Length: 282
Length: 166
Image (tube, rainbow over all chains, first blue to last red; front, side, top):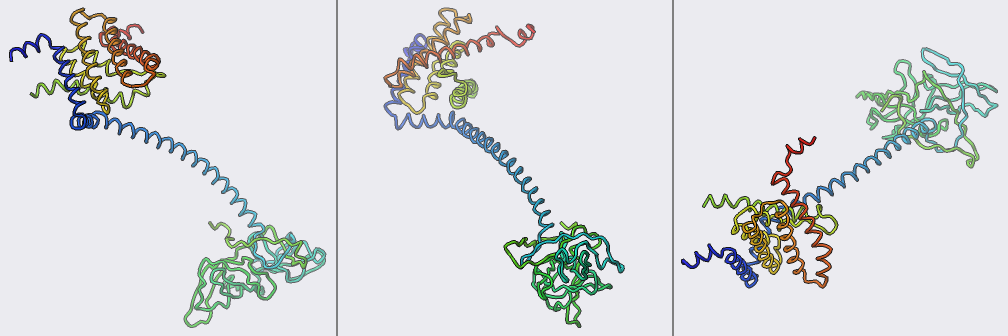
């Protein structure tokens, strides 16, 4: 025992070096039973936390890169959205000018109003075109948003447009949603109404009423009004349907007569505008 | 017993530092093929500032941690690290190792010896080439880092001195 103590004191470095060499030899000899468990333990304690940290940092960096890519994509998408909004607005504006459904081919004859006949409300408008420009009695007259009326009186250079608000004006119409049909007419005490709608019909507030094309005066699909109220009296046969005209008859700017043409190759066919809305409506 | 364990804590922290550097920082801090050999640097510093036996066993443990996965490299690394510790301690006690250049020379020698052992265990035919293009620059890089560290450690550079300059 004394020998080993002396050895450790005087030849400490050599002894410890020898011990380390011995440990090395034992590790090599018992690789599976000694070295591998020790190595795994050392890895688990000293290296694994840092490897995991490294992986986390790498994934964080990737997330950061991905985030930058997505931000760029979002920016591009926002630019596209803005462009699409602009196109939508332009599209809506053009459709408001031209967008009426027609089953036949028509050409537009622009009209300019120069006088309005009132009976409490505007009931007729005199316009600056007549037979010389191809107008005919009964031709539908529209504005940018929907049906305004029809040509009622004609001369060579002038015409009178009977407005929807004239109690004598009748339009065969139907609900664009439920397809139920009726007659649109103006009643001074009730305003614009859709008459002859069965009481058990599916018509409801907010539905768009369009011309049905029946009767041959107005082509099918012209927006006429929006259902404002539906009343159903138990003792009545028909429902009471109040409409709000899609065209503000007190503020008409652009008017067009729809002239049917026989030669469809020169026809201007304009698209259906089912989403035509009232002024100020979202 | 508790007292002994408390004395071990700094060395365990050194081992964690070596592992962290090896896993996380060695690659980002390398310049070309030159990297900082932190294990021989810390072993040399421990040998300079701590008792010999402590330095020998710490060196063995550090070499084992650095070379996990290769039993031959681990065994050889343990012996080389122990030799570095013995050598550094020998110079410290026999040659009165107090000057900064002498300490830097010890770190440089230890680093070079450790790199030589590492390259020898690569078992390729281009040992000398690797030694020339990788080990020597790494040794110089490690020596430079050790020099900077010792400048601060031995207070050749301090915050107050830097402040005095400006």
